[in-house]
Structure formats: structure tokens, C-alpha cells
Image 1: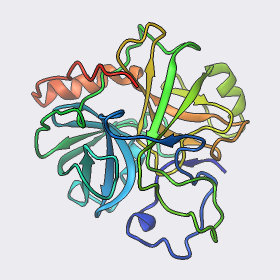
Image 2 (image 1 turned 90 degrees about the vertical axis):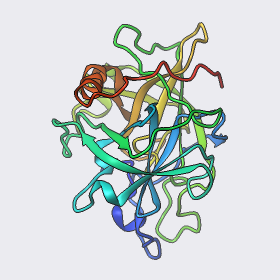
Image 3 (image 1 turned 30 degrees about the horizontal axis):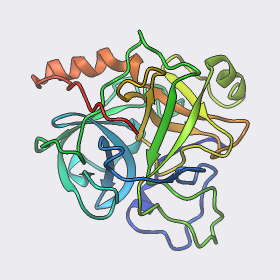
Image 4 (image 1 turned 45 degrees about the horizontal axis):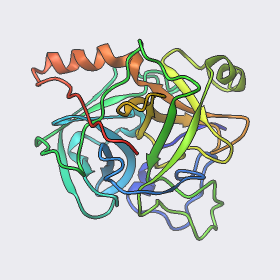
Length: 279
């Protein structure tokens, strides 16, 4: 069965002992450790102080993540964001949320429109450890030549319930993945769920995102090595690094108008140009 890449509320509240892992359990699979200096837009979204999802800084008080990370009965007061740290459990800055804005058309059954904006209770002071990432546009979609990177703190792999490795990664990790064409992705999931134009797919042999990485960024570098762009939000998939089923991501470019409408509606300063460093 498919699953989102979200750590369920019981895990977020510390009920790891005896927990049974689901087919989507895992952290960045086939990747390697990195630091927040390399991914300064990455944040940890936390429920009652426990990491459950990732997210990406896109403005001075704004984080973009997945809608499925937010479930009843929890309210915005139950969540925090840790930014500016390579570790989800220490360092950086922990910020409370003013508001969670999930997309009005988010469908928890199909995972279509799976995105949310987090409005922080404080404005961020940008440093080398803390930077926004610019959003991709429909005019410049990723291609086979785009270098795609996914990052997060999710579980190690699809571990069984008695595995000693069950648990999130202490250190931020990333993996290179390849774009999977929409037609190929639709065929792969034809008996599972529809792949819509608001989704993109990516995977590489032995490399993928997994549970605990939900809401985290899929960024890309165009062949001319310009700045990173945020192309996707970790959403769902069948298994982790399953050669027959690529990871599915919310297509950020398809929602750029919606994001900017939220910015205008709330009178924010707008989205920032974003970090221009290179990995």
C-alpha cells in the first residue's frame, strides 16, 4: 500500500517502542550526511517538540511544506519550526507558528494539492545557515539535465518493527534523484492513485525520500548552474527507493499563483529572491 512520507502523530509524541513501520518508512535513502550550510532553506517541522516533517523557507516569515503534515485535533499552537540547524533536535532557532494555511483543495485520499504555508510568529534574520529558496516557475520546468536534490531527517529505510534503526536521522541528509517523466510516473501508479499535473516524480536506483521527509524540499539546478529552485515538496510514494514506484512530489510551480495570492492577501512583503549558493 502507498503512504505519505509523514511521521504519524504517535511517533511524533514519542511512542516509538513497539511501533510497526509502514511501507513508506525511511529517511533519505541512498544519500549522505550534509550540513545546513549546504541547505540553508531546510527546516524541521515539529509537533510537541518532535520532528515530523520537513519544510523550506521561502520568505522572512514563511515556510512551504506539505498539507498532510497537519492533522486534527492539532492546532497551529501545537507545532513549531526549527530553522538554521543541521540537527532536528538541537541548535538553530525554534519558532512558533502564527498560522497554518493548507491549500483549500487538498485531498487527503488522492494527495492532490498537497501543500501548506506556515506563517511564523517572528521574522527570520538571514545568515549563511538560514536562507530562503526561490520558487520554480512553469516557464522553466525541470528537465532530464536538471540536478535534483532532496533533503531531510526521515527514517533510515523500510525497516521492520524489530529493527534497531527505527527512528529519524539526527543529522540532515540529502540524495541526488532524477526526474521521472509524467507519463512514466502515471503508468507506474495507474493501479494506485492518479498522478496529476500538480505532481512531479523523481527517483534514482537506491535513492529516494521516505517518511519523515514529508514536506521537505526537492530543489534543482539547471545545467547552467544557476541558483537552486524549489521544484517539489515531498508528498507520497509506494515504498522507498522501490525501482517500480518513484517518489511523488507536489509540483511547486503549479501553485506559484496560489502562494503569491496568500502573500498579497495577508499584506506580507512578498517572496524573496532566495539563496544563490551552490552545492
